[in-house]
Length: 401
Image 1 (cartoon, rainbow, N blue to C red):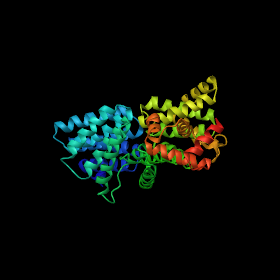
Image 2: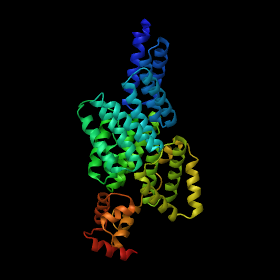
Image 3: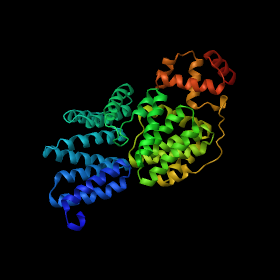
Image 4: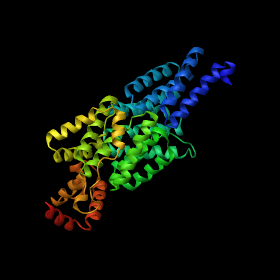
């Protein structure tokens, strides 16, 4: 009706809300289509506020979802400068929030925390949902920086404030499942991850699935982890958004390595590295130890030339080619579910340190993980080996070593 009547003002507002709805639904392509048309109409009639809204949802946020992080950050800076000049409080806090997310993904954690803190300051004047949305990027930036204790406080505050808006479907902005996992609260992480998977769609769902895959690995559920990681990649292809593609590829690489498919693992690690290089999406510090340990295990299992050639083969793949490769079944998953051969590289590190006489807190410090995570690994080890004490574990380790 707006098109037929030539009502450009009303049409630009409809397109703004279509871009917003597309983002909530995790479809950046649809958001860009609506946002660009809405921006052009708003600029034509001189409506700077609607133009900002269209650019925020339909350009900056959509670009961030697709993994075009530098473009997204530039868009947010431009919108904030214009909003400042127009005394537009709402369009100062929104871009600051999303800038915090984008900068965290890019690895500039100091700037990300500064943007998120500034967003909280502005949001305090608006209250309610806006404050909850501002807590989330701060938690995200703190997690990216490896400050898990601070991230716990921020993500819990975000969850509390967002829970007041019952029935409102929002983007998967609060990283509380990732935070709980990094903090060693694996059961809580699974609850939050399950809730996010059930409540999101599009690339928001891909993020939730990628997180749940890592939680499933921590719970010793490799089949669940593989299903979730592959589904996350399938969703990423559908909506052409590759923010989580390298994380999901690395998850599958780790599972392949655990199963003894070392060349496949090396190819997937190489592919993930190439996607990181092309998008600028970094790996969070909280995931670095597990990643390094897993890659080293694959490198040791292959001779140098085999590892390097497989890595290069993976790195030569485009993002879509890498996803197609990862989603196909490669080889038999031969890692047993019980016994010494069922232990993952990280679990073996924990066993080694237990054998050296270290307590859980000392093991946590050595491996850069939380004491709760150490205990979770020990529980899985006990179950796999059919034992119930550290004494039995030390005896078992001595026998195999």
